[in-house]
Image 1 (cartoon, rainbow, N blue to C red):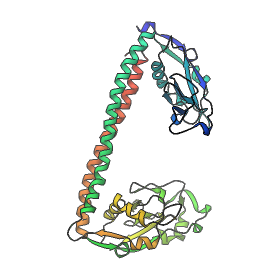
Image 2: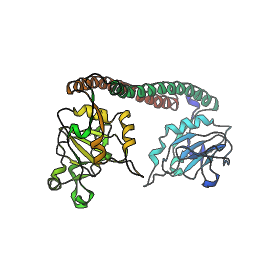
Image 3: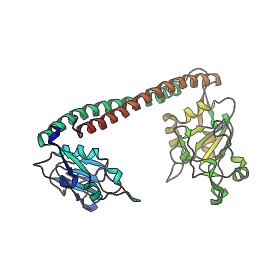
Image 4: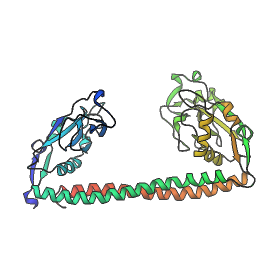
Length: 377
């Protein structure tokens, strides 16, 4: 059967037609027909531009992305749509074919775009129509199974991510003997803000310097430095009152509340940014316990109710100082976090397994496509 396959330049197989702008007045969330951008549905409308199923190929932005359409649709001017001779080619065969060509590699420019002439120049192998139908049948069935397996793996991944938060939520809600309510000001040696913005100037920022810790750097209770937000040693020395020490807690002052992280030996000597607080805890408060409590969903809801600001939620020194915390004895805090660390290690192992499974399923899809279009399926 492979002997019947023919090599053809893609320009002889499909035509990439330009999409067309659609005025906002014709767009509506509950419109009858999808409006496609470069990478999928962007809107709805009661108007349609093309009246049969096709394939959308991103022209600008998400250039080279490939998506199937519904019966009637409107392609925007950032996309191409495919027309072809239905007597010679199956739509889904062409869709799978285009997925194998890695069209995003043709994207060029600041706002990536692809030139259809470059795409047309690709030589592809085309089998007779019955063979196209056979290949599509196999791929559809295989990809349906892969989609189900991916959905299950993604659900399991979400569940494993929720286990750790659920455990801590239960601990903070049920509490136990010896727990007392204390203000943050009572368990902290000091609560300080970062330096005022006027204390930092453009000349203070240097590459490969000492990182600043701003709210944007606090991600999932860890600190991720930015190469664009680093200062010289001289600037750090000038702002020595804002230098972080191992054991400090850095807290985002505005934006998404509840973001905080424990300063470790790695971040010792870094500089608190203008949008953050840093707290030095007394011996009655365990740093990891504080971070887990402060970042919990239960506590975030309390912070939302305490925050000030009209355009962006913000915390101030007074709010933090008066914030009530459920505080068990320090020995219980350490026991809670030791158990939490064990659970975290287990859930992270599960997450790794599910991520590997998702990657394997993606690799399987690519392998099936490669086999299909090399005549080995």
